[in-house]
Image (cartoon, rainbow, N blue to C red; front, side, top):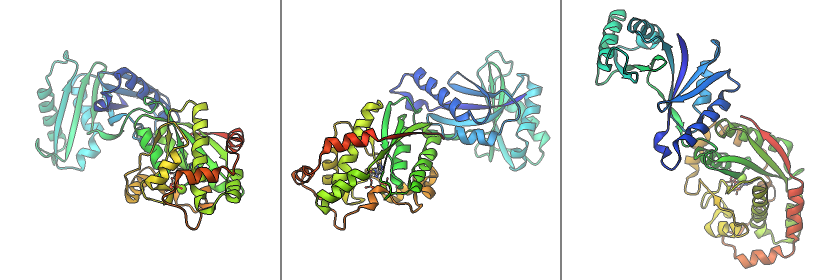
Length: 390
Ligand code: ATP
Ligand code: MG
């Protein structure tokens, strides 16, 4: 008799992927997510993943919270594992689900018999369990159409599993099955959400953050670390590259027209990010841009920014309203960190009247005043690497 966790894969999401690749990545990610909760054996069989603790004193609430953030899961539940003999199953059902059964008035039983050697068929298991529970909990009645609670019993190779209905998993694809991309992370609301959305599609993340000390503070950098730490709860641990951006911003400020400042700066971010992405084997860049949100996010402005790099740029928030983005940031617990008031390098040097429909030639002309290659190389050479853990 033991408590375990049962996990159903997000099978519909597996179409484009080999099933075994999907499951191997999922098992590995579950192992990482549970590493600091305790020691577990994780195995897969019959499109279910079984998580069995090696000791009794497991913090199951914490384990469930961790598992609920692993992408690629359709559903999960805690369950009691007991011997496959009917009286034992009945006793364990009443004992394990007592709290739930005492707090409702109607229930039904669903049974699944994967082990065909078990002497009772599913309808018989349901009937016998129903009968037993009605006797044990006289306040209950059976309602097969609209029960307040459903008792689930699964008879499998290793034993009988008794549980309540499953909780929905995080959905998506296991992180690592979709390749690696670099997220340009600021301290704002949008980029952590963009990171989370791409991780949900199975993309492994590398962070890139531009910092401009002393214009931006150490606390602004700490904020980025904690935002990514939050994202890492879903995306797993990831490296973050912190790029020194002060010299570039000062050069642009001194030598280029003020209304083009932001665009020229963003083009530098893209050039440097693409370089870092190549070095660290990322296949794409990710930003938190959304059409029309600020002057540098008009279509023309974005076309102008991405013209300096060849790598694909993914902008998962492109068609979303701020409200929708905020809703996700609250759900993934980045919102409260994002709204802390520390300056980002983008806000330090903002022009009063930024250009919203820049001409490419105009920008290129302005950039001619700068030694672009030297500035990019200097920034790349000064990068600091930090490891972000969930
Ligand atoms: P966010 O809320 O993500 O900061 P934003 O709406 O404030 O976005 P901008 O400041 O124009 O928009 O930035 C657009 C995108 O550029 C960000 O979503 C992020 O991907 C990237 N970015 C901005 N500032 C930085 C930075 N300091 N370091 C790395 N990337 C950045
Ligand atoms: Mg910003």
